[in-house]
Amino acid sequence: MRRLRRLIQKRSLRWSEGVCVLEGPDLVEAALRAGTEFEAIYVDTTSATSPPVAALLANAERAGIRVFGLNREVLAQIADAKTPQPVAAVVRLPLSELSAVKVTSLVLVLHDLRDPGNVGTIIRSADAAGVEAVVLTGQSVDPFNPKTLRATAGSVFHVPVVVCSLDEAFAHFAGRGARILASVVHGGAALRDVDFSGPTVVVIGNEAEGLDVEVIERCDAALSIPMVGRGESLNAGVAASLVAFEALWQRRGADEGRPRPSLEGS
Image (tube, rainbow, N blue to C red; front, side, top):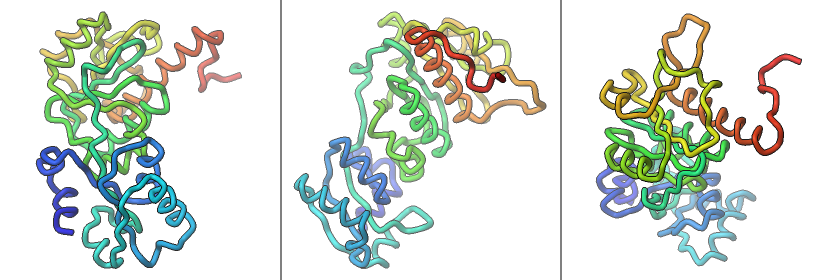
């Protein structure tokens, strides 16, 4: 059990062993449905007969996954979540290779994003909006730490997640003819004026400082989200979500006849 706790706490151990810990029936079920490689599942023995947990364990048994019963107090000591979950699992890192990412629509690159909730939200929105991949570069948070995994609500198993250097990301996407755009607070093209019909990569910067000038200058152009209030900037998770759904809106408009903006009055 000490190893499970250390996997939750230490990024270096997760990456050296190539595994992470999932907490909660929903996240474990999402990994099962996605065909993720499991090491084992751990269940609170007092919860094993509850309908959702019993159904999950039945699916795990059909998949040939080892299941171990634990005392509730032991599972609570392992858990990262404030409200201990009745199920936890150790799975292979759901990590994709940069070389496998083919840019035909939109890819989001997150550079130096430090907040687990923001990164998890972006992965969840990327999944919902059909983004091809989410790439983390620089000093970004580990996408496989418990807080980020919970914030993805299982989407980490549906959208490719890549971790690499910014140089590697730029070289890969430029070599495949993608247009690379920097997301900036002011001075870029208005989001609704950006053409997302071709292969596009949008780089989202650090929550507090945004993108460095050097990074912006390496991009082909910049985009900004128009704001009319007094706030200085948008949360990085919100900004990335707006970009992802604008790209989806444009692609659907091209395929089905351009729809009215969702917030436009009748």
